[in-house]
Image 1 (cartoon, rainbow over the protein chains, first blue to last red):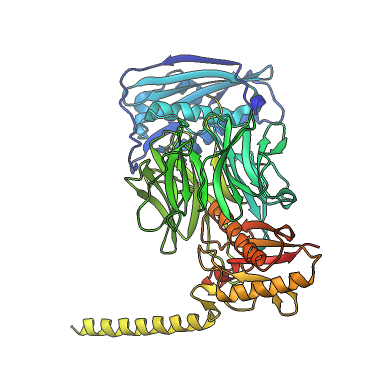
Image 2 (cartoon, chains in turn green, brown):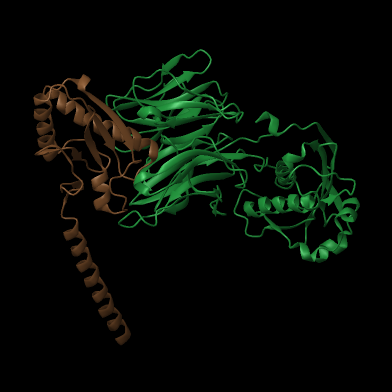
Length: 445
Length: 158
């Protein structure tokens, strides 16, 4: 993955810290998205052709990706380009603010690019139209084949400037691609950009694979595979494609996740009908048993500081969520509401735990504080589970299955996302049916 | 008032229809006791009169009276065929989270294995594997299908 982005040159022109008139509050549902004009980036006429890239359209293509990203947040309303009043190159130098205000834009993005000597040079500016000034600007150089990532990085910078929060566009999602009838499903590991582009399959579908999760640097994935009919946790290096079994357990291991420092894998090991939680240190290979209880303990997830583990257990009779210190001490039940609870996942900010709740035959994705208080159910459906956090802790991605008919017809599994405000529920575009999503951290940081 | 009376009648008719349709579904799923499947529809046989599978209640791995009877037949069969090894596959229905269901399937398969062992079958002859909710035998989204999918299946290995 390293070779995908080599930012050769990364230069901050100017960050204008002065008071801007526009800002977006993302702590609540936004019913009045900010009108923003994304001008096509001006393509320098000195640009040279580069293998497989339509240089003349590149500026427009980049602006379109930025618009799709912005629209998907629910916070922005990208305006139609046919109303634009200035040519891209002229607007980039200095917009006629009053003309852009006429089409009701409050913010304007302009930019230009040059492809020369096998390099793509891009710069962009974000303008506050009401205050009539530049808010931020950035220039960088990369390889032309990275042009989609350029669009995502620009989106992240603008999102950051307007919301005060880190963006989540230059990211990927790893998931399980599904095909075939419901009782003979073929499952493959797949990876795609956050916006659904660049789908790649990492396994061939010869064996059942489940629950892939990224490590903090997004180069490794841990997942479960039924290779040779031995269900075990595996480790996969995305760049080299090498795979290995994690540990030497005499039975099924499952539900793996990385520790926040990436050094350990926490997972369940099932033996004689009892599943407990274990960790394995990837360097020393030392295995530690974390829980020792006759009930099912599974779906462990570390807190971002590595000090705690949330998990679900049926030790009270039905599945509930518990939190313990990462050495297994101080186990405390945190869910007491009506219904059963599973798949706790700690927010990257550390303040919330996302979960799946089952009640009266319906499935909910929700969030609660880490002591179990303040439960908020974000979405209800026939079947949905397995939330995974965007790196800024503002959006959850999960999968949803539909009810099927008597022969299994009508069955589908798709990825969805929702803001933790409970607004902006959206289906993610995937090439096939999909489940078990895991969101990467920002690729360039 | 007249309108109210009409409305009441309409509601009564709707209720009656609901009750009737509830009756008809109950009849169709007459092969469920509690929510444990008791029918034969999906059952295969290791040998004549030896069913290959047992069924479980939602979220449970305890053995019913019928399940124990089935497992005793399997034990007798395994005692007679001393060179035979089996794998017990544990399964769950689709109405639970994936990871929990993997554990639940393992617990169900082990419940069957433990019972066979109390009837004198060596644990070395019985391996277990859980498929969680990944391999439904009935792909429908109905209580009947779910009850058929909550199962452990004894499969001959050699």
